[in-house]
Image (cartoon, rainbow, N blue to C red; front, side, top):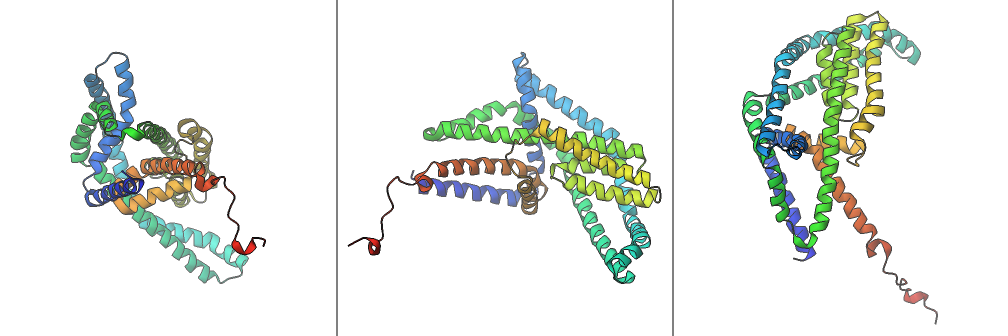
Length: 365
């Protein structure tokens, strides 16, 4: 097969895969979630196999432990989070109105005097900005809640996802060997090297980032609850779980929590500062301890690239797209670096070693 036909084949395969995702994105969620669970738990299953436990029993043990922890989470935390979310959405318009009045009353006149503009115009501008921000946060919360309902539905969570995860985890090594047997023999070593690099990038980011999100979510939730912030458990857990999007989770959590703190604690500034300090400490822990230790630079991708991948895949394929965005971006990054290495080693970049031809009009007679 010529290079041209190979390129055509892989481009056609990519187009078919994208079309498949687009058409079936509404029903793929439990299957993608099951595949993600199997991928996350496969190293644990391999370790149990090394100590003499069979693959079947290792799979059953790990999956039952995972389901037990998940059910424990639902029984203990989900009712509290659901209650706080319902109250937050119910009180959200009132919170926005109170925050708008508070800022206009205490900051509007001072800012208008300093800027040399009319106080009424500034108040109208602030009201417009706060309204737009509130609308954005409301739509985002509704979107996340809709995705969460889809993810946490009884059918997908307690039936389809565990079954898919069980069979994939049980047959993981066998499937890897089967796929390996389908690879082109001529480029087998090179494809295996790229696959190993992709696996290291995806595993390092996904498994590390899951740990970072859980740690940050626990820290934010406990800290905000200790301070006594209304909806602190919900805001903290949400900010931690959305931390897989660089800067977005902490930024949204900070804005929402400080807004709630202003309405709840004003004019007691120490409590408002304490709420902001919690996110400052969380960002310090994430940037200086958690990310370097647990994630590092495993994907080799810039944070802006990760953000673009998350939003682009989410826009195209919905919540399923957000689940596959980082692995897909990491794989594309590996292929892009491989293509760059091939280019830098090729005659296109290095040249043929022959002198460039001299134009005829410059040849001396």
